[in-house]
Amino acid sequence: MDYEPVIGLETHVQLKTKSKMWCGCANAFGAPPNTNVCPVCLGLPGVLPVANEEALRLTALTGLLLNCTVSRHAKFDRKNYFYPDMPKNYQITQYDKPSTMNGSVEFEFGAGMARVRITRAHLEEDVGKNFHFDRTSGVDFNRAGVPLMEIVSEPDLTSADMAYEYLNALKDILVYGGVSDCDMEKGMVRCDVNVSVRPRGRKELGAKIEIKNMNSFSGVRRALEYEIPRQIETLEKGGKLIQSTRRWDDVAAVTEEMRTKEHAHDYRYFPEPDLMPFQPTAAWLQEVSRRVVELPLARKQRFMRDYQLPASDAQTFVWDAALGNYFEGIAKQAKNPKAAANWVINNLRAKLAESGVALGDLKFQPGAILELIELVDSGKISGKIAQDVFAETFATGDAPARIVEKKSLAQVSDTGAIEKFCEQAIMANPGPAADYRAGKMAALNFLKGQVMKLSKGKANPALVGEVLERKLKG
Ligand SMILES: [Zn+2]
Image (cartoon, rainbow, N blue to C red; front, top):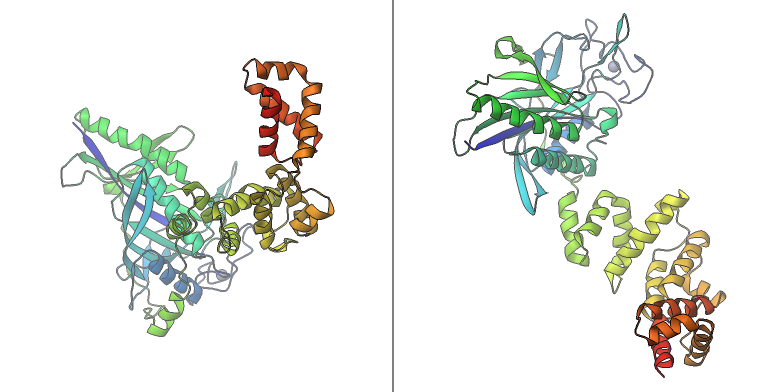
């Protein structure tokens, strides 16, 4: 029988705020254990939470970026469970009235586009972190109370690869919007995966199996690549799948059962009595909507359309937004935007990486790149000389035309001079000259190279080719 997987993802993202969700402690990674804590985030008796407004704004902004409805009436609830890393013994979250609902994410998948519906994006708080040593365990509460957003997708994903691409698209959007840095190394994005399989074409869903606490996108893909065939094999052998929670063992590359439905938590949700419902005004929402940015995919498509760039160049300018903005600054005046993109991607980016100079600290004006392109297009300098000129422009800030003049780098298009160089090259290399006359076309390139050397790279290569051929044949 042919089976199809049905996958939904719950993605947890730490928000980019200065302070925690309910107190003024720093939202910062890497501090010594239990140094960013206070009575509120330690859950001591008698404290009251005060909502972080920036976290509320970032959640509403996420709603707008994900085409969600942003609720005018959201509220917070307590989710009760006991965990050593959660000092209050409950987590403040949004249960039945989340901040945003009913959105979608569009992304490139395979040769086309995919769209995954977003059920909701709601606001909650992160928990602390347990550490286990040889004989003892410790808890670091620095992370407790960090603003956390949960983005729940509909079960629209149908493969491990699709889940992987969706997560990357989601991450790109959140980074672009300034909602989160999404640094996986720092645990800023974590994921719960819901996956079931069903005979293709059947309406009802199979038993939902949840894989908890994934902390890398490639891990999600590998876990699904393991879990989907496991479920299919179980069914094909006549076995039965039951709703359960599993964990991914990255080293053994298997999922293993943690608990079944009978042992599921009863979270006993109830409205958080210490927080008012959140009812944003139209003016507040208007303010947030000013922070909406162009989405990565829209930017890619626009770069391809407006500047006739290939997808790979446009993608580079999406991933490196600052470089893309720099390119846009000159592309509007460029006769040939593709040539400008080549210079920015191949030469400028390499120089920046090699020198450690920041894009904002360049010594030269962006127009210098256009000047350089013009010098090459008009035949004044060769592409090879242009590289040297650019290196000097980069180092000194001097305009390319000035460098060409100062160092007399202008291409030699004077036929007399080139003829002389060609004669010298043929005289000095009788072997290759004879080879060419005998029909070995490759020998011409060798002789061309010799002429370029003699001219110190300044001879016009097209002219060199013509003159050499004429002399060899004559
Ligand atoms: Zn605190």
